[in-house]
Image 1 (cartoon, rainbow, N blue to C red):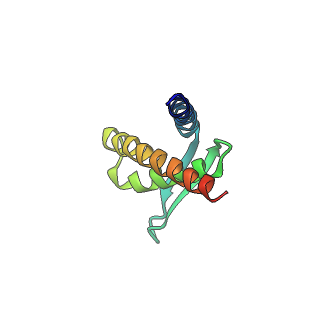
Image 2: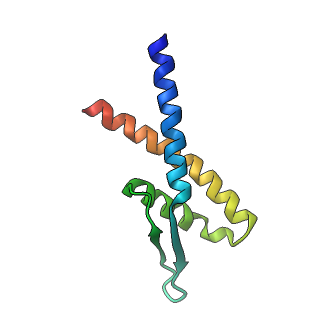
Length: 97
C-alpha cells in the first residue's frame, strides 16, 4: 500500500516536471500560403525531443483556431492529451525493458 502511494507521488511529480518543460518550450508555427503546408520550429527546447515534438504537434493542430482565447484553449486541451500519451508511452517503454 505504501509502495503504491509512493509510486503515485513520484508519477505526480514527474507530471508536474514534464508539464513545466512543455510550458517552457517555445517555437514558431505557420502555414505556407501557397502549399498550405504547416511548419513548426522549436526556438527554445525542453531538452526532450518527445516534448518538443508534442509542443509542435499541439500548436500545429491548433493553428486553425486562429489567435486569442480559442487558440489558448486548444493548446491547453492539447497539452493535457499530450501529457496523457507521453506517460502512457513511457509506461509501455518501461514494461518492455
